Length: 438
Image (cartoon, rainbow, N blue to C red):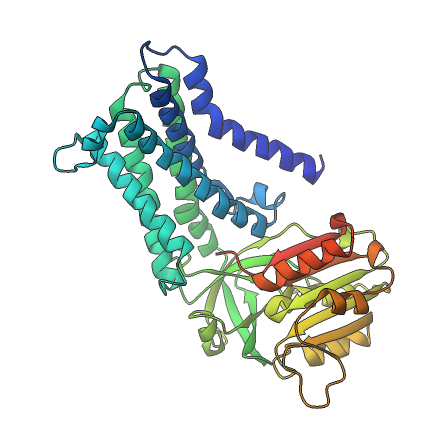
């Protein structure tokens, strides 16, 4: 079965779980006399709650899904669908209030019945969750505190929402509907337990330790680690792993990084990490022997599956890390196909891997073009930001037949994706990875 077929089947299964409460609601027996708008509000609330609970699925890093969908796609789906779920949930009380303004009294937590109080508090928890997620950087929330708030709000909202629908008991009087929501609650609990308990326990059985920390250009460090008491992991060039350093896997202090080493090098793996936040600023302080844990690998793109005459790599900033893993892999495999690397960087001194790329040019048929925002005096290469004019000029003539891999920060990705579409390069040949998932 192909990956695309599996993807379709998983999407259909996901939709079935989301829509199951609605299917039961509309095909099952219902007491007469209920207004259309009231029933519609219940249906939207059911759909929103089911969708919200299943948001554990794309972020649980389930191996069988990670082999079908790339992690940036799963996280982008999670972010977008979470807002859809919130909108559906909010439509439930809004329609109730519009249909019968008298129900506004249920907002009074002092006098409302507990089933209504649970619903109101669940909505408040969701409002906090959405606000802190969408405007985390504006609120200057660090990742770890935000993660704690996020998990707490999810648990409170899910528990109280379930209490609300079971206590209202109008549609829960249907044995089929009641059984479905019990099953959904069990699935949600199992997913949460897997993420927070089972997976961390499994990781404790396969620790790693730091062997080297190598300083690179541009406030960037390469972290080399080796397995302790186990065989390690087998990864593909371009994949990522979640890394936790000097903390138990049961903590929430884990962060995703791309492998920058070749998977053909046995014994150790490397991650190249730029100082961009609280955790990344501490990587340089790690010492040989420090304990780390890896959850991975994740990612579905495989350069060895592409039967193409050549590759084009477009990297921005530290998005060069997975590109280096691919180039090193191709070099270790003795690949003779033509390769193009277009590397956008702020300055020449910030351009990570400069020397390593020069060495790879001796082993590969590799054409390298740097695009610098602030080039040094006398610079003869491309300058400024990646534009259509620049890419159209420096892309190889056989661009339509090559496979593209694009990785970098969000703003660069949006620009490059638009340019590629404008240049009429087949999108089936383009793999895009945004270097941000949380």
